[in-house]
Structure formats: C-alpha cells, structure tokens
Amino acid sequence: LRVEGNTALQGGAFSASGVIDIERVAADGNEAELGGALYLDSTHSLSIRDSRCAGNHATQSGGAIYTRGRGRWDSVSLESNSADVQG
Image 1 (cartoon, rainbow, N blue to C red):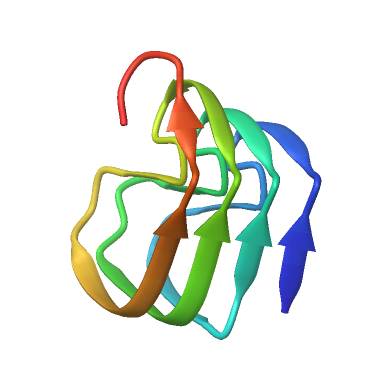
Image 2 (cartoon, one colour; image 1 turned 45 degrees about the vertical axis):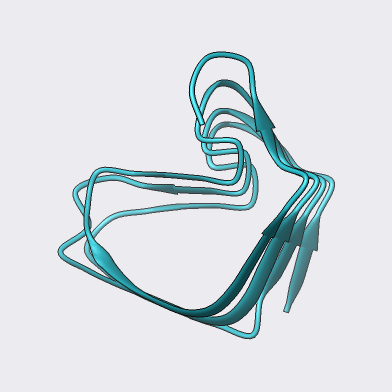
C-alpha cells in the first residue's frame, strides 16, 4: 500500500489508537501537525514491518511518526523526514 501527498492535523497518512499492525506500507510526502506520516495515540500494541516513511513533515513533532505507545519495528526505513519542533 502506498499513501502519499496527504495533509491532516494528526497523521498525514494514518491516525489510529488501539491495536495497530502495519505491513508493506510506503508513507511518503505527507504532512501533519503531529506525525507527518503516522499518528498513533495510546497504542497498546504496535507492529510495523517491511515499511517506509520518507519525505514526511510535521509542523510540530514527529516528522515521520508520533506515538505515545510502544511496539515492535522490523525492517522499517525512515528517510528525509522533518519536524519544526521535535523529532
């Protein structure tokens, strides 16, 4: 799945909470205040595999990903993401 060129308040490509399983996703060129590509709030279980976040931007925090949860990351590429405040 490829998600690109989107704009949102939270998570330019995805915004979610709860149990999250992301596999083989390219989230490129998205923008948000928090989490240029992904915003994951209060995530109890997060798994990201074989995915890429490139060229995303956050006007506040989390150039590629903003999360308050914890999880497992396998074969995840984060390239050329930026944030104006943090991360």
